[in-house]
Length: 151
Image 1: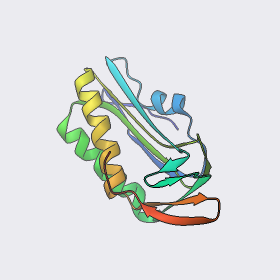
Image 2 (image 1 turned 180 degrees about the vertical axis):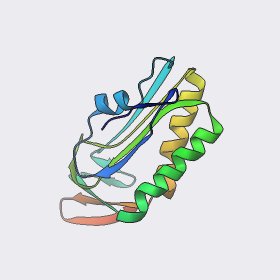
Image 3 (image 1 turned 90 degrees about the vertical axis):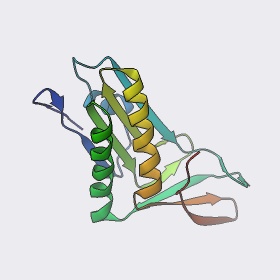
Image 4 (image 1 turned 180 degrees about the horizontal axis):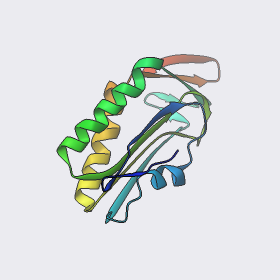
């Protein structure tokens, strides 16, 4: 994962894949000498979900040729709303164990209020609009769940 300066700003990173997410690389992708704030959100696999204890692992699938353009659209919307220096949105697919990072969003800006607001917008919209599904596994069963709600 790399970013390069482009006319005073970094190039945005949007990736969906099976490789583990490196939080330091995600933060590095949005680094800028003009940044006064960098916000990093990490979504991790937990051992429960609403109404279900004992989740053992998750399996993520994404609609291949549609998912990255949809996330890029969300990133572009955030750029229209806030003065951002860099945005990175990375999501895993495949089987993930409890505690693994499933999604990372990093945003850099001159000011923290913009960075916090934009990071929240990107993760909330990604969870609502990106064609990504998860299958929760627990002892004795499994079920596909669409995450289209905001907590």
